[in-house]
Image 1 (cartoon, rainbow, N blue to C red):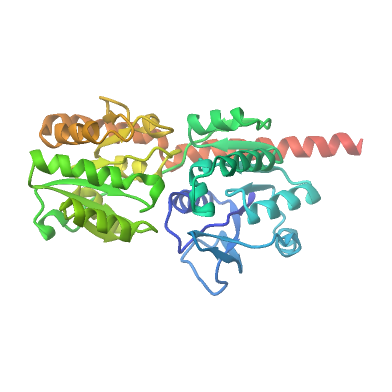
Image 2 (image 1 turned 90 degrees about the vertical axis):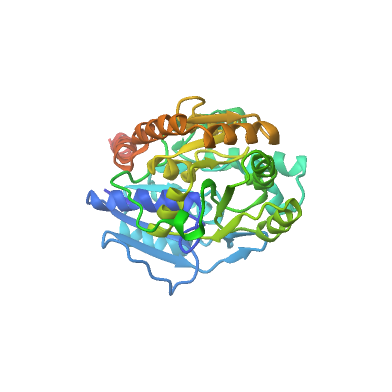
Length: 387
């Protein structure tokens, strides 16, 4: 098949949406499908991707408060020329912003089926755009998302919780759950990060360093952890707009976490292996790639009872679920795992077992089925109109 993908965010950005898209298009290419990816960024950026994948970039303007995303005035004529040459069977939009509207317009004009994937609880991210968390901004966000996804022929969400929210705000298009896919194989450590830093008991956070991730709650919880386990250390792997603020809070709390910055590829794997326990206090997660990647490296986890987190971190199965924003409860859960190696090992085995359901191969099987159904249904309609 020939699949055109529209997204406002792509490499060199590092976030869950980009990782999900990369895993998706690489597996599609491996199966012989042709992929045209249309996005925003510098046109001279080059990527080491398979010959079946072509990336076309258009210049946009970076959002000052959210640098992973660029915007531009939709110019569907530019993308239309690429689609005319590519002749896609299906258009798949990954972000509902400016490139998303290019996808909507082209889909309607060319009669090509449109599938939209909703990755994020955008109402939780309004602070990035408005700097303050306004109720009116949340209402606008919900109305916008409703209007956009009702333009699609099929809507997908990686988690049940976001799927239910889409229905709640009034999306009438058929919605199904298709999870994000993660590469699962023989993932091995090459560099012993624990030995490098002299670590004994390590707590790991991996992901975007931003307000909606509630990393300040993790830092305050670590203060409680270190009161019971002085040798415990926190690794924070990632970057983002709250980095300086969190470093100041760390100094105030006197907990001295290790901020590693962004890590990719084998470096990232090595840092994941350095963690005895992965922790997230985020209340805004859909289906975070960070949790899937940590599970694929056979780790025990601590998360909070909010949004899509409990769908991946199953209490007393592969991790522990704490109350949102409850610093003492999160600390108790971390301490319990750090002090109980047998329980960690039980959860680690369960993580590796559970994550197999999210393998990119199984997930791509589901996508192929939906793509073919959309293509066939559109062809059926065309034949009906022509007779």
